[in-house]
Length: 159
Image (cartoon, rainbow, N blue to C red; front, top):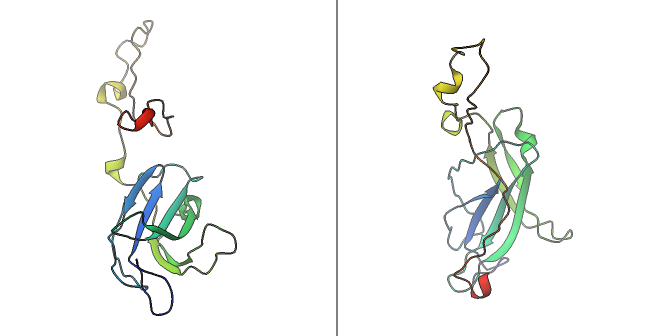
């Protein structure tokens, strides 16, 4: 197992989370100074959400060890400018503050592929504006944060 500190190393990897979506970086073997240079994209709709970077020491056998976290409010990127800088990696406890630093480059912007336009039938002009309406069109775009109601049947006792 890799260790953190003098004479040791780690196999760092990140799990990046936003709005329930999580993506993972590659594993950087035997280093305390990893270089990733990897890009990720997330759907991001609400300023009150938190962008989390969880750093782990990857272990081949057993669970990977939590090394620390960088958490950034999405509201800090609302100006849509490029934000590049170093951020402190914090532990789970308030006294675990010196867990390293991460250089991050973040920009919140509009991407056409994440935008859903209503169907043309909903956008067209009313053909019979003087008659009573008799057709309600609904365009269901997406949902978020729905509750878990079905347990995983593959787990013993339903979960």
